[in-house]
Length: 241
Image (cartoon, rainbow, N blue to C red; front, top):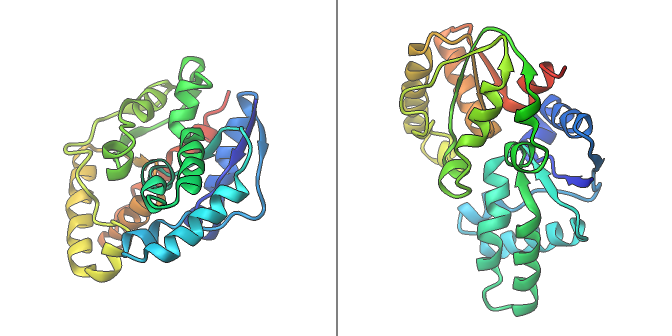
């Protein structure tokens, strides 16, 4: 199966190891992975900030770069949701572009979605170690309705213990530009999230969105905790059999 890989800005800029891990996972389960070199931001920050014109420019570029019929896989719930749920509304008055936006939205998958529903990776299982808990990011759960897929993958890790986090789907405070506009509130929310993480006794917290994981990692550093913060793609790739 041929797939197009969209890395997302945060992965491309700050966490290339997550992109590498995601591609290794896709290849391990039989995918031919294509990385369109012209890819840039999906336009989520501009759209969230009310800059619709700029978001449309980014969306048009994305639709052009990711043309064709292949599935598009991204290790980010917020990016997948932007393309699937928000692109069509950006072109409400442009019928031709709206059709293209709907079509590309039908082809995009968040990584855990694709691993479970298309590749059935959870049925094959992974190796794991230690105690793992999971943060359910807002747009992944509320806009994409991806709730059970990451849990199925984590629970398929032989040798690892999964401990559910209290209020796992409560916001970590990142919220894209919210974190920049209201940093004090964002930090307080991240501290609350870290309290729930530490209450599980886990040695690793994982999630599917690097925005959330970045905010949680900041709280971890400020608290001086030694808990590891890893994207789901990374812990799954480490456990490939």
